[in-house]
Each structure stands twice: as structure tokens, then as C-alpha cells.
Length: 156
Image 1 (cartoon, rainbow, N blue to C red):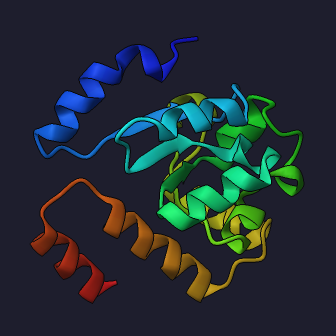
Image 2: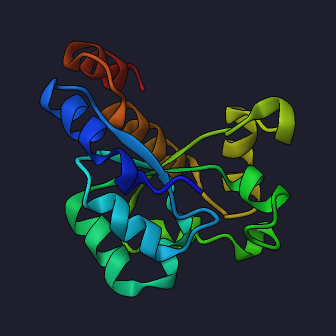
């Protein structure tokens, strides 16, 4: 366990230099780790799915527009959630939390971005518009030039 707070100075330096910041929290460690992450200058949180354990935290994430990089397959394979049906991604989205999809460690989990989109459609019942919104969120949250983001959104 490597608490992100131990690296606060590095996060501050990166943020001050104009870099986007993301931090790993709320996968194995619970909602408290996400609260700790929110004390850092982050734009995104890798995983963050255990935020669902604290309604005030879910509300805070939604209000601040913090993006959660969700990886349902790895969460289920590792046992963070027993099944896709238990995974909180649909509830987080319904509460207004911005989410993207990630494959985590593809060779280890047998996951892919396309596979995660399929999970969202087949297991969570997401339709094309839901998946397009997730894609737009990923583009908006990407750490790249604004002109590239705009070009990608126009083509999405």
C-alpha cells in the first residue's frame, strides 16, 4: 500500500507545471482512500469504484467532475467485486459521476478496451448513447492538447 498523500509534493509540482494528474485509489482501499486522493490536485482517479460506499463522496465526485477510470473486468477478476452485477459503475454513472473505461493490465486480466465496452453493454445494459458519453468523457479527460480533444470529439 502506497498512500498517495506520501507523494503530495510530486503531485503539486506536476500540477503547477500544467500536467494532468491521476492517482490510484478506491479499488482495494475503500472510500477513505478516495477522500485522500481528492486532497491532491487530481483530475482523474484510477478505479475509485469503492467510492460507492460513501454517498457524500459520490456526491463530491459528481459535483467536482472528477473522472473515475473504471476497469470492471480487473475488479471482478481480482475479487474487488464478486460479479459484474455487483460492480458499482452503473450506480456511479446514475449519480452523475463521470466515468471512463480502462483495461487495467490486459495480458494479466484478458481484458481489452473493446471488451470493457462489451461488458457495459451486455452486463450493465448500456446503450449506444451511454457508451458514446463514456467515450466523450475519456476524450475530455485525456491529458492531451485541447485542439486534439476537440478534433476527437467532433469525430466521435
